[in-house]
Image 1 (cartoon, rainbow, N blue to C red):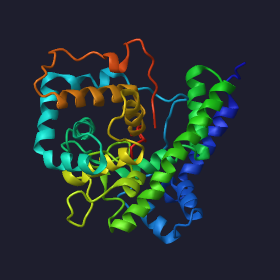
Image 2: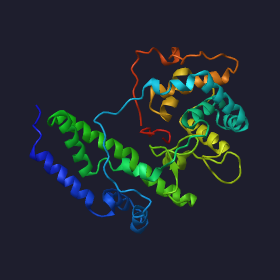
Image 3: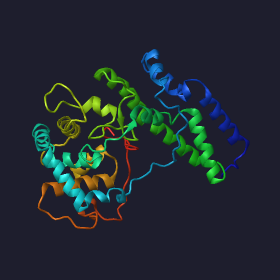
Image 4: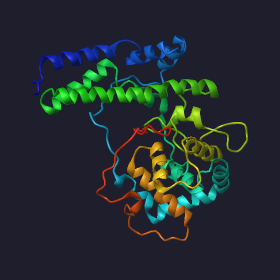
Length: 323
């Protein structure tokens, strides 16, 4: 049964608007959550009152998690892009090979991941990641949830309890995924002595060559060239950190195809992404293998075009790898 949209929806919308109008440019919910989690109020408020941080104007989300299409990644398997990925592997050969020797993750896989993520560091993103992560962490703010319920009800012509339940579940999922990343970003900023509002990256809040989320940086980022610093914008550190991520989740020499797929899936919960990374790695490993002039179809490694694929975490939104 569906309820007809009426006064209840309008009332909810007014509550949402008034809640947003209260101080801290709408970020109150997240500020209080961080303070309750042990962060100093002055520290938190100082960041959220910084004029560089945009106000929270709401976050729209769907009841269902979106799925990535294979079409999104087809361009990575053209002759020109495969040639670029091979050059990435050759250009940073020492970094990739050292990471493979230390962590047991193939250099070709590491080069493939960095190429698919950021074109080997050429496109790391220009978004202020604090804002992007904080915005996603606000999904479950009560007024924001109600706004989304009203919006979807208006689109569908009435309230559907099942859809409302899915929206609330989705809001909780987004908060559970991205609130820890906001918290981790404060820790990262303090540990590394950086301004949390200065870090730039993707729209999902990931940064660096491998597009790590802050929690993955804290857990997996490592100094790959021995210069005493860790930067995901340095090829050696990026390769070593990416390798450490995979090794820490069970990658070892001699893994079977299904085990490799499962670990790349951990990095990004997208079948299309997994297929692309592993196919590209195979081309990198076989530099004399010609690449078809048309986009490579999903082969045995990715089953058939009819196989259903599910989507993941980041974001980042692909939240897994650190994404």
